[in-house]
Length: 214
Image (cartoon, rainbow, N blue to C red):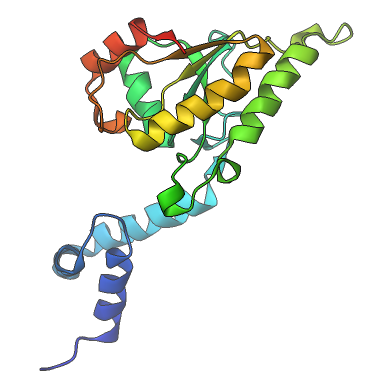
């Protein structure tokens, strides 16, 4: 069997390292790029360079953004007293598509999963607590009223409705409740065991509207 050219093998291996892409799919993608117009490969390479060079994590909500703070955290028209806690950046996009939520977000970057060795210390939970405490203790700047921080009054837990998501929601709720903050959870219109990012807009809208106390 004739060995593949090294650049082809390297690209197949690179594609195979991506989640959800096996060797066959990686090979198909590689040969598609090989046979396609050069502009497609060039545009892909440029997009990947831009992705790493021009994106960052918002220091307030920890969502992926192109500026800091991100456009949501910097929007004075949104309700900064309500913080929606999600697992991943894609969950923010799913909720934004509903156009029903007008608060801000906090991205945990995962969920508690002992099986995978992911504990609370691996998530942005400590940052969430710090964010809440800062909003409660530093609500005004007499000399700079434009920099006043809106006190957080509600934490909406929008982790995925599966075992890991529920465990994460319960853990966060247990830490937040002593701070005298309202803690709510998305309504059970979401399918148990599913991922938030795959939910349709109508289901998410109903879940937002029907959120309940934890």
